Length: 296
Image (spheres, rainbow, N blue to C red):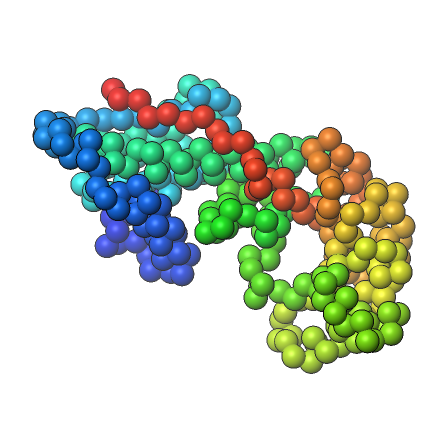
């Protein structure tokens, strides 16, 4: 079972504090003016009920810990009990959690908890589809920074629950030299721009920080290798071009493929031998999972 702590016992690490802020913002969206329906029905305040969070379709579950936090923030007396762990597979009809306590509090927590469960389970489920599509290869699936504003931490966790791996979380996580960076350095010889930029960056960053270079052409791949890039992003290249790029890299840098890769084509990309495939399709516009709250 996932441990769900009262708020005053929640470990005060940065990630926990960030998640609490996300949940507070979501609850404020729903409860800033109170709940005039529930609050106007005093009988609800006296009712004690148990409700079940149930998935209506097969999925990979994500967001249970967050849903529990929603319930605790609405009413610390609510008892939220997960029946599965984030990352578990649930069949349609499966009860994934239950909550007990004041009916009025359950009603106030219901939609926010379901919103998190539905969206995050959707991300985890879509990620699992991509991971399974490259099964048997050494390629890992990761996300991009194309995430829902304010929800990146939770969406990144959902990607992990689906079997993916983390990419850089934000602009400070690692150096990524992209096409727009290179374009504004246009006064440098095009054949030297990557080398000059990487050398400049190396002099300013910690020795523990990696440098990733985005390459749109094989010529840029060669420049990135010679410049000593740690990771080379092969952007919008076909599988055949990626094979050529890998022959240039020769394991001297991690190769990451990205751009225009779908569930239908990802297997062909993985079979090139590329180490990582990053895609926004596992976070951006992912269909939500149907999850409901049923009263016993």
